[in-house]
Length: 151
Image (tube, rainbow, N blue to C red; front, side, top):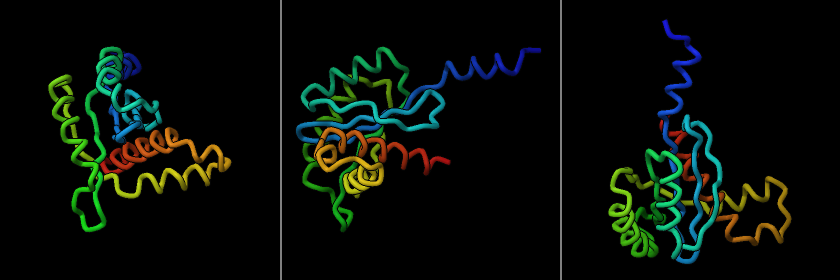
């Protein structure tokens, strides 16, 4: 009879991370879960023109089971203007990493929520002007929202 602890560890090795992307014209925020897909953490912000190579490199080192991509929408539920930039990116990403499924997640209000999170966390005004930090926190909020709705 195998030890429960060993069975749990074996199962844990097969778990994959979920990666979330807050796509931007200049910068893109990225968040990731732990292998058990419980905790969402900000990973980094990368220049959007370096995003595909970054994702290829990251997924070669870490097991990624799903990529979430923010879906920017207007208040009337129509796509926002940045969607025209995201769709070509998605096509390239699907070709680059065909083994990883992609899912879109509504990202309305994430930037405002990220900014409020920074205020609530006691960040100084100068720190809150750091757009890269806002993008990374926004990606984390997208990911946390997805995880919340899965349970």
